[in-house]
Amino acid sequence: WSALQSGGSVLDAVEKGCACCEMEQCDGSVGYGGSPDESGETTLDAMIMNGDTMEVGAVADLRRIKNAIGVARAVMEHTDHTLLVGESASLFAENMGFVAEDLTTNKSVNIFSQWLKGNCQPNYRKNVFPDPSKSCGPYKPRGTLTQNKSAQHANTRSHDTIGMICVDQDGHVAAGTSTNGLTHKVPGRVGDSPIIGAGAYADSSAGGAASTGDGDVMMRFLPSYLAVELMRAGADPSAACKTAISRIKRHYSEFFGAIICANTTGHYG
Image (tube, rainbow, N blue to C red; front, side, top):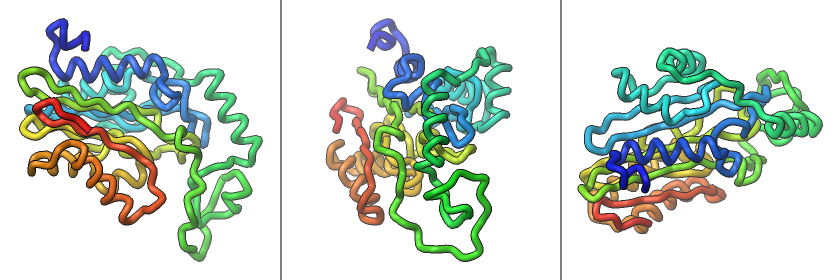
């Protein structure tokens, strides 16, 4: 709000809102010091989208840089690309003037240590040996594949995101996300947050949407894009959100997640 009230754009508002959450380490699921992966490292994903121009900037598996949403905006404004990943994204950020810092904290070290003591439970491996439900890695592929068991994933607080939609008085729309991903994820894993149409989507002719939840499932359905298109077709925001979620639950009945939707007139659900 303060960004808009001081004359900033919807992009400024989304960036500052997400950046605030990154520094405050919202819910432990955004910013540095949270969600260590299998090697104990925290990496960040973020995305920002301009609903006027349909430009997008995104980063995934970002290391050493706390301000992931800022780097995402730099991708949008200083390259012709949409998504940069991994070590190369970090080097790009450093070249753009972002400060390299250790994203590890005492809290994330403790989470990682307790996980190792608990035989690396939970984890996200399957069809490997040694048995991932009982042992830590390194893992190797098993010769025969078995039907995927019910996910023994970590609790619902272990994967979350900040998702923001901003609509100003002139109907300009922007959306953005930032997250440190899934606790104990396989290194290199990227969820829905930085994926356009999955983590968020914005179109100033229709509205915006952002999602949170089990990103590995959500990104298969592009729920944010679907919700915006439903609003374009006349659905109110609440109905658009419910339809997008029900599309996922049709295939994954145990799915847990949420979507926020806002149209160009300021109605939301």
